[in-house]
Length: 367
Image (cartoon, rainbow, N blue to C red; front, side, top):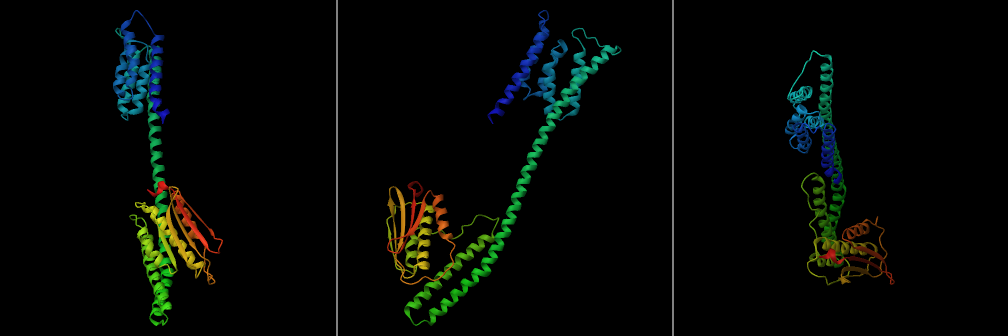
């Protein structure tokens, strides 16, 4: 960026310097008018980018009155690189050629002499070269812009293609979730309802109520997620109604295990931090329910060393755990969520045979 900023001033300075060298090469102290025209033409090149046609007109007196013609050729080149009016460029080239062949204030142009024709061809070729070079630069600039537009359009087309593929995959995933998961969870809810009505044991009836409530809640969240997956390309939609610290008490009470909640957190925690705490406690209680049946849990939240500290500890299980499928994606998700907030999640067994899951977030993410 810096090199481009200085490129134009350096190029203009170089052209003015070469034009002054041309004036010095044709310097004649006995003809001050010609030298003044030549100097004016040299310094007029500083205006060539903003007013190319005016610059060319300002250099023409130097061609008429002196032999310093470099500034006029530079002005003609600049005009050709900016203008698309071919007739104007041709007239300017002819004007330069005729002016260079005449000598003011005593013009003399005899086209019958062979030397005049040779000079005319040489001068006309020089002017034509300046015009063609300027047109070539203009064409190159236009092609560069066109290539940039094509590249941008290709990137946009590739993005649209990727979005189309993603939308197709999301729609397929939504169908699978609706057809398979939703159907099975619905069956669980129906069976739990039947068990709730027919159970004679209060403990079994309470378990059936819990299973039915969790099944209905899962169905609601699943339907919302399916609608989000199907709405690809639309406006951003929240995956679920986002939980907060106010929902922790209900989460612990409905966890289906004996759990104690000790919460001593400052007010004003940001929503991402509150969601991270909620999801950590939720995952920890789910793991206790799956892998440590009969165990009780303790949830402690507070601040330590300027950071938010959340610890979920459970005792040793009293019954053998059922063989349930697990890919440890829950803990992986917790680690990723904590890392985004600058925190860390640690977990491991305790000496008494239980398990502990801990979340620590820095103070700056808890503002």
